[in-house]
Length: 198
Length: 198
DNA sequence: GCCTTATATGCAACATATTGCATATGATCC
DNA sequence: GGATCATATGCAATATGTTGCATATAAGGC
Image (cartoon, rainbow over all chains, first blue to last red; front, side, top):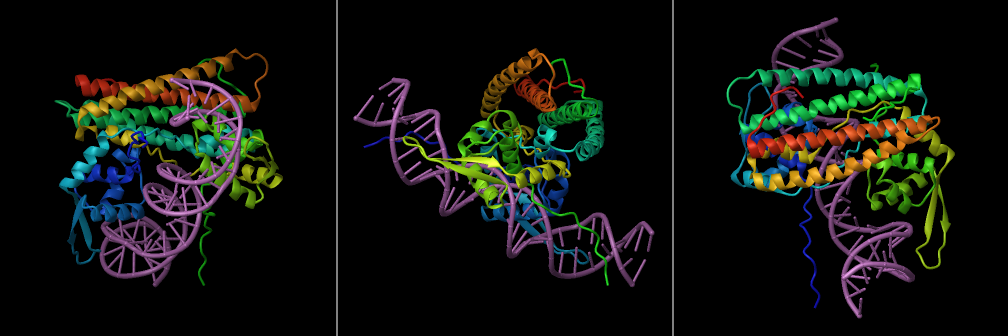
């Protein structure tokens, strides 16, 4: 007789399913609504196309973690108004308390930068400029959100505090990208290499 | 008759295929070798299991972008020694010069933190501690690499410079994580919320 | 009038990633 | 003596994500 060591339940990641549960926990809504909401807030950390959202809502429904009410509309398509169920809340809580798997950064842009010495500078520099612009614009948005948080008076709920701390991560993340892009640009155009530790 | 606007070639991302080409461009090797190399350097930005690497090598071979030489070994399994081909280099160059698609951060850990107000603190704090440890250790590694880069004398090649600038990004990225984790811990244990901009 | 955007949901094909399993030998750990 | 690790490659099933397309109405821009 052999004793086999305990093997942690493998369980798939299910991040999108649970990100959806988080959103529905905050406020019920349609798949369409969720797609919108995935552009701000939690969308910093997880995004999804509407196609994927509809699929996952269907799967979540089959598992009884969400339920919907069909709302017929005259001059617009009918809507399915979803809300989280009690088992849904329990499943979400379990997922939130589960162990974190190692994360992968997986950025194609970083691979391209890392190997830029194998490419012509022109197109690479063009992408760098474009991304500098984009990231600067996004940073401004985040900074405005931060300002409006800091301007708020009165007690901050745990939820608000976590949202704010996450926002700070996003702000620093964008700044990190901007710094990288500036350094790569300086390197490609002027051959300048940073000589002091990051 | 209708004229349809030019539609950019959709082309799938193919990041792993091209990350493999980058590695083979640097030095030929077996799938096993590549799996090892994906742990340092470019592995910061793209990782893959050995199963996936073998699959992609097969696909790359069918497209003629890599080729291999079978090396029979007596007391070890036979090896396929891969190298990049001329068409492979051309394809890699094209990919490196192509436009960057918008990137998704997609971090399950960040989703969990964002929604931590719905969970018991215990397990979340345990994961935070574990990750603080892990990230601190990884940061030390990266800092050692940086030190050895800065200690180097003589001219720095473009390639070395890009690797270094990428490393700097990785260092700042880890510091950003450490700061987030510290802030979340302070929030959950002491209710402390940062009161100054990030 | 035509094109685009917003509202609202969804199928199908394909691409990519994860998990479990299979095979085979030699070395090292306990 | 058995377990684990390193070497070396791979199949199969499942999970997740992307891309293209389909449908239907109303509002607004040119």
